Amino acid sequence: MSPSPTPRPARRVSREPNGPFLVEGPVEVVMEDGSIVRSDRPMVALCTCRRSEEFPWCDTSHRRRRRPRT
Image (cartoon, rainbow, N blue to C red):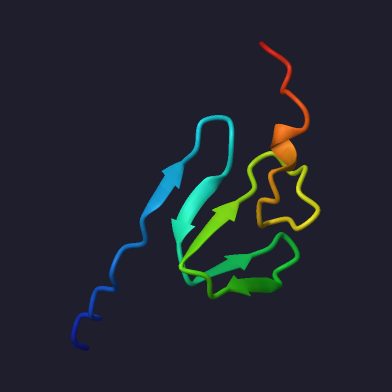
């Protein structure tokens, strides 16, 4: 029987109201096509609206248009 792997420290993720997810970095994101994008910044903003020209990183494009109210 192999020993249990050492637990890795958890990453903190928070959600900005009507905005991106903020993730403590460094961060690797696996994209839909299987490619991996990486940021070594200490905090990254992940786009949740898909309006960013830098997707998956947020570029604050969500601020330029309002989401329709439901």
